[in-house]
Length: 242
Image (tube, rainbow, N blue to C red):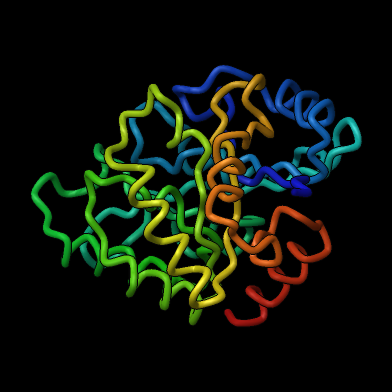
């Protein structure tokens, strides 16, 4: 499987990651990654960067070590209405946005229906490009509704390699991934594999995710990672729908 994108990574700025932008770009170059997404955690995550960080991204070069760099954010889904934690004035200037549920930022008491509604509303946000790690069983979801909404709103569903780590704190990951990947096959919904790297040595590491896709014979034509041109076409179409 051709795999030349990694669009979900974090640097020191996220507060609980351990490498610089330069180190991440170097690692991406060595791994054959053509486009690297730096998507720092949005402000509600403890210890991460604040609003000024996202407002100043234009000062950073967009190519390092032969790797094209994209700068965005992993937004936190904050409530059952799908609210996120950066204003539209910032979102519209970012290259991409991932929307994810994280325990410190989401209501502690929640039902499957409430979780699903929160994610559906986030998917409808015109600035959300990728649904991040929807595999976490701590936040049950109705995957049939999620997959259909992703298709309707031109949002990529993520296969998060970090979630498949034996050290993951997420629950029922493999079972949940198999569920929504099979639905993506049926509905012909595009997916993206991401490392969710928090250190340079993990950039471009999609090994577990690719093994899972091969196991279920997931169609390569639904995997955005195979082509920079296809990714850019996807992104252009997404921006036209805003």
